[in-house]
Amino acid sequence: QVRLEESGGGSVQAGGSLRLSCEATRISFEYVCLGWFRRAPGKEREWVASIYARGNNTYYADSVKGRFTIAQDGDKRTLYLQMNSLSPEDTAIYYCAAVARGDADCPRSDSIYPYWGQGTQVTVSI
Image 1 (tube, one colour):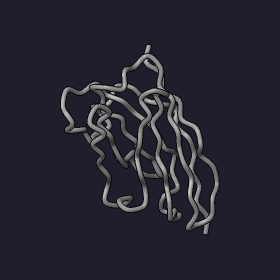
Image 2 (tube, one colour):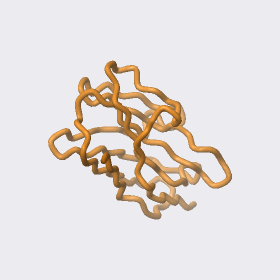
Image 3 (tube, one colour):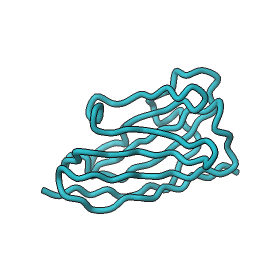
């Protein structure tokens, strides 16, 4: 059974940085899209970034482009999200997700991803 487990969340002041990790088991880091999503208080879950493991193609939501970096280590089967210049608007529960994919056109809809972690809280204060 595929399992994803996030870590690295916490509290930080605005302008600070955090790095999230997501360890995956029972999933090959080849023909797979790996994504980060987040759910802010009172809002629906939204897509943040994705990476196609085989080609290392990366995609970002406009709200995080230039501040966040998604990366993966296939040997460690770990997905990362480096978050810089954090603002209170980034406060949310962050989830990693995975979906097998034969091409690099990673979906942005959470309904497409069958595998999810339990989430990690990120809180950014002024």
